[in-house]
Image (cartoon, rainbow, N blue to C red; front, side):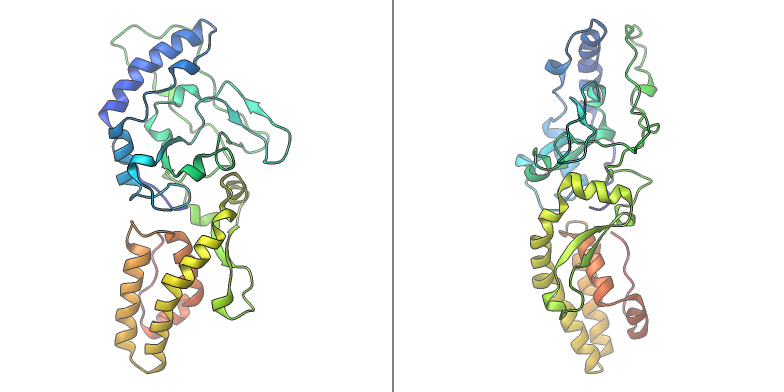
Length: 291
């Protein structure tokens, strides 16, 4: 997982929110179900905007996705939040977060796997002892053309355990890194896996089942990254520092700095392990920038 910048909200989503939220809220005030109204957020424009903003990759696992088959995912689930830990008795908050169905800050594009019931599904755990977002007031909305209250869309009062890749104040690499599980072996035999550094990283790995990615990421690193590191090291060993520096710069540009590259977080971690900062400095190789 790496940071995502959504960019400006599509106009169509803003229009849909005004119309559909009003209908859902009317049923909510009347004590009825809002589920029938929770659609209209995944328009082609919204999907295309997210797909481009996420550089054609899943927001959670970084695999390439097709625009047509991707899922517009609600980071905060629109029709009931699961607070429990996987494998424990269910704790479902059925009242949240329907009003964020059309909130641009709540939408991401995910692959089919990350969106299914065995992965993200409706999980949205909170820090123990903290409170969820307040429900919208059960009073009629102000008459048009008064704007909807800004407080309806604010999520700053909540403390989720699940990392939001689009949060402007969170870097997922502070919480989840990729590390070799058998570093005492020859590095071609290393098996890479996501490792948590904080409780937020731990719960995110559990919710998204990121360990399921281990074999695929391991194969990618060995086939597409390590072979190029070997080339750099070959140049260094032969005293061809200029060639090593050029090869390294191309490698970093292709697999870390290119926003469309898959598994940039894992690649960044692996390169930092295979060619640590001290070695990069010693050989005049470019330093790594966090993706």
